[in-house]
Amino acid sequence: MSKINPGSNRNEDNDVSNASPGMWDVNIPEPKRLEKNKLECPVCDKIYNSKEDYISHALAQHQVQAETVMEEKKAMTGTENLMELGSVQFEKGFHFYTELGQYTGITATSLSEFQEKINTVPSQSVTFHFQRQDYQKWLRDTFGDEELATRIDDLKELVDSSESSAEDLRKSISDAVKDRISELGKAQTA
Image 1 (cartoon, helix red, strand yellow):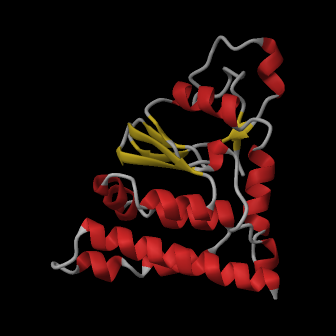
Image 2 (cartoon, rainbow, N blue to C red):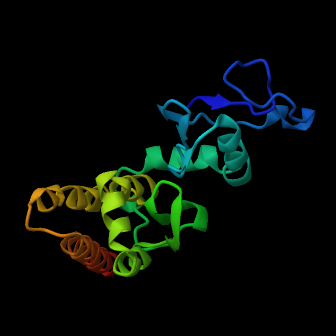
């Protein structure tokens, strides 16, 4: 994983030129470049309009945990590593938006919370995140649940149908998550 040093002004990619000397040893993950002036945090997938905004976010949210989160993501390969029925910190939760920059104020930090909240968020939020494949990314990257991510990915056919609505999509996602929670609960008790 490449990193940037927010305290260094020797790298032309850094916008921070007046950082304090104590920051020289702080490393944060390099953001993904989406389009001109758009950066995505590789840890929580939030989008930023400038490197400076991203660095502020990463320092506040990820400087201590970035390496461990990325290592955990790589290590999640089998069901023994899945943490679907647990919860994550708020920062790693699924934050529902209706469009870029329009946060609904609703966040899910576990699969059961996600299943509950997908039923209450505005329909615009349901389709916005589905079209961007945000649900699938969150399930894979945060919970290591490739199976559920694939099930939700398979709902593309439903969306492509001219007869389906955002409410059909909402119900299908909710049902898929509910079924997966049930499966995982049974697997834990077996």
